[in-house]
Length: 299
Image 1 (cartoon, one colour):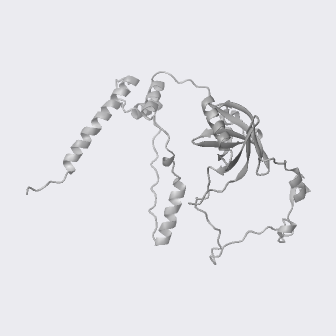
Image 2 (cartoon, rainbow, N blue to C red):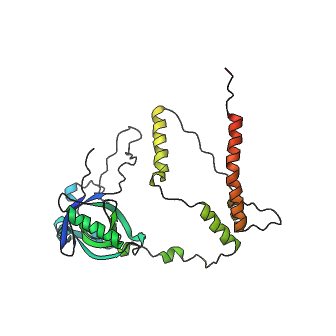
Image 3 (cartoon, rainbow, N blue to C red):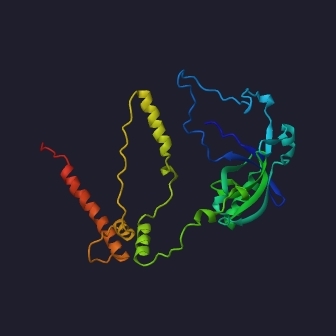
């Protein structure tokens, strides 16, 4: 098995203690299905080319330069050496500014995760930091230059190592107020809230990353396979449009207690209905087994 390649190497420093570390990509999209753009007529790949927006002439790589638009059609040209000189100097050190409670940062600020591991030497100091953070139940806020930009990183204990998550800049995170401004102030209580709590209770579980499937990738992979084998995929049926139903009735049906006339379902009834359903399943399974079980001949 090929050892993973580090994306960055440097030091992590807390107080006067420092140890060499390496960052490794924790999440990658390299395994996704990739397409090439082709000429439909010839089947050949299409090459991307930069052209002048006014003259239409191709522009070679050496003639391409960065520009910042100050007015409509007016640009300030930034030469490559000028951009390089403006990049913050990197001392390759993750300087821990503070230790904070693990849940203090809103995860809307989370950008990209990296595994943080000791690099050859300095394992003792690394383990000391990891175990100290675990015991104190804290995360660390650190800063360094990563990939030419000064980045703030959240560092947390993760298994035998640490995980470092780059954080979005404050100006990149949009306010939730605009997204929720049209949401009316409603207060749900009584039977509907009890039924909702019951349904939530029956659906409790634990997170299993293996069940998080990429249905788009699977569908495209099946399409590619079908094309190779010269067959067509069955057409999907359009989903039936359901009638608009009463929220309370939908909750009662979800809780498995129905909505008979004259009845007044409650959360307690919902528990009874769920229990009846649970008890009925083994009986039904046993009955089905009797019907489908093969008959053995004597002798």
